[in-house]
Length: 315
Image (tube, rainbow, N blue to C red; front, side, top):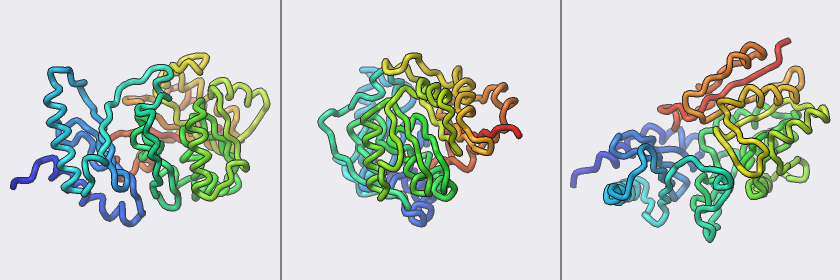
């Protein structure tokens, strides 16, 4: 029987990544990124499971037979390539979320959390309950950098999500303050600390509007050696006093972060906003360096998944 183009592509991609995955003991990685125009999907492998995100033009009701056929094709290709059966394949649709939709469960009854290895770390993930899984795969290189370069540092992680970057910094010997609006994600982050033999009580987890908390910290003259800033591209959550548009607001957000930075400290800023450009006022005020190339892992190199920068105070 003739092999499908989708299966051929999955096999080809895995062949390219196999040595990288095995050498680093990675269990969660991206295997497919809209490689074939007919199949505008993202496919991530999580151990013995897969997550498939529908991308591109939204399919209408008239397109439903096409979606069903796509799903069958994908299920078959994944099972034949990775021996992952359909029951362990999770299909999701990516679309802009508004307000508290960012925090609402997709499947309230689904609480199947399991552990993914990313040496030297372990992380809890859930492939059904929310749109995202609890682990941003594209930040893998930054986690590796943090564990090797955080010893003795005071670290602030803003919009920390499930605190995987906080885990990496703490594992590297830092004292970490993690801030997020979601109690669910902060609790998840503390569980990640425990999973990595780290004592959450030795660090700070703050549930707050990040923009508001930044002002309180500036007033208190708190200082950090390293600040991690990976905000959502857009948020109008009711929990925030003001909405956030990273393209519009990043200069102000960066300015406030720099007020909390020690003189020789570093701010790591990243965004998934497509076609993002750093405002000229930012690059004129601070020493800025784009680090996207080394912060994007091998399984994402064929796409501009994020842009990342370091910012330092001018001497």
